[in-house]
Picture 1 (cartoon, protein in one colour):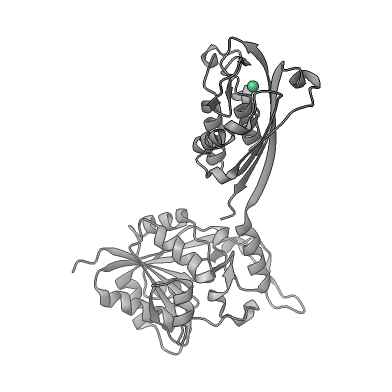
Picture 2 (cartoon, protein in one colour; picture 1 turned 180 degrees about the vertical axis):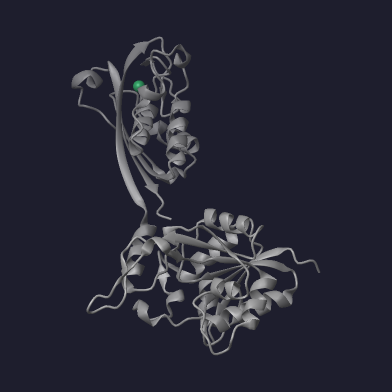
Length: 382
Ligand code: MG
């Protein structure tokens, strides 16, 4: 069988006593998901990785099955080195794996860009590791403080570490039984092979202490932003009435440069507000003849595209239409469906309300229609 596949090995056999969790830390939950499942999902989803194998401790099968139903696994050994060796042996026995990424389950967030860099580096080296510069001052000893170490000569080495399977397997097999290794790259270097370095990522930092879990939890929560929009258009005879993306039969319509859909304009401004991208006039100047009579749906979808490009997802839209007539109730569901379709969200995320102003003011006199909207978006944390 030709060896051409790339596998990922997740080392999840530890006990993790320092983390303050009642479970071994690789099975503790972050964002409602067991730690090991985060790394498993990220590695499985990378198009360059064909297979993911998890190395667990004796008696941890039930925990793994609950965390990742059906995950491929092998039982590791007493030390990390024994566990990695067990995984490498299993991959070698399969006969079709050429390259392997060895990853610690305690690093749940695995950016695909780092995997890309590692696999690229592996084309010219037997091993590659992600590294980051050391930001803190390093010194020997603890009390009293010892001599400072020159940090400019040092890097922090992360995982996943990528290897030619045959090269790392022979490094493991040749390593002295009584000596511990801090990582697999050290073992490959011992065989005289060069280990390439690629840029790491702070997202890959290991969760070790109780505070690390709280920080990871906060990182996963992401950021919510809510912004508002407001618009008014004049009612005039001889115009079509477009409201909420729907044509409504009425004796007057809204006048304006575009189709004057005051509801879509308010939502567009609210969405632009969530990413601080100006207002509808910034993107579609009334002075530009190409927007004369334009379908306001394109303003709304443009704003939604800008929000998506910033990495945010639309979570909720709440719209209030202010007018004496027409009655909004009979058209509410059609508007919700249209706006949901334009924003590519579920209808349950679109709320439409209507009110009058008790015949007071310009809306009360039927001279115009006003709309206000609030948009809530979420920037995912990871
Ligand atoms: Mg407008």
